[in-house]
Amino acid sequence: MKKGKRKSARNKNTQNPEVSESQLTIKDVLRYATPEQIKASVDHYFSRKPLLTPRLKNWEEDLPANNEKQVVPGQLIQVTEINDIWMEVPRYENIMWGLAWLSIIVLIVPFIMAIGMPIAMIFSHNFNLFNGYQIGAIFILWGGAFILLSMIILNLRMALFVPRSQPVRFNRKRQKIYIFEHHRKAWNPWAKWPTTVRVFDWADIHGEISRETDRFEQGFRLYGAICEPGTRKVAERVILNYSIYYIQLQRQLWSHWCQYMQHQPVVMDPLCPPPGDGRPQKKAKSLWPEALDRESRTAPE
Image: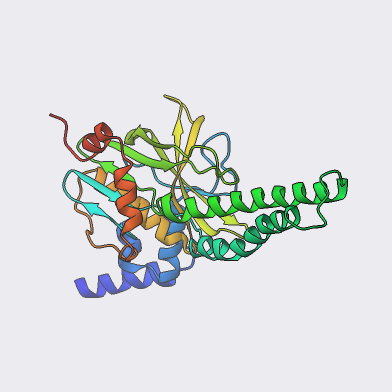
């Protein structure tokens, strides 16, 4: 009799189209629902309209609060270090770094020509110091050489001195998040490119996802919004993970972080290993301020 009742209940929940997702408990959904119903239930769990103001550009959805029980199974994409005190996840910009070296190679030849041609003109027999056309041509070529030199230095600094990863550290003993940022001046190779580490209380972080569709970055990007105390007004936003093609991965990543900071058991193994080139990661570690580096990796005394 019990088996018959269970079977009839299952048929009622899975075959009756009048049973809505809101009438099913999470337990019912996981036990009886079709894959389509499970997907609809998960989608319903995420906000369908912005909860924070001002609205995030290209807003896609708000994620569950970080102190709530997470329904989506947590999963790391990549991880540098994870233990009982702290976790560091890499954060990679969607930049083709190999193009920096290619640009340097391409620019060297015209740079040498822009330097050498005025010198050849000056030492030629036909050079006249009072000829305006010749003097103008020399200054134009040397001006072009300066621009080419600036572009070479820009690409050289990007290739050698910019950390590929700008990691995020989570300290669950302190309940703080540490965000490493390297401020690159995109078109000014002569300016200083400083490094900062920003510290936030994890309780103040609200998760949001945007949908990026420009030619340099496409997919879903994960943001952390920091609101003014007691309000839903955003004071600032930081990028927690750059764009990836599947929104489910960003949901799982956020869920993993929340579960980790809630001192729950989490999956330790990431989906993908970090890139084999360890130099940029070592470079990032060397740029951490000593006090914050120590604080982010230790428990409070």
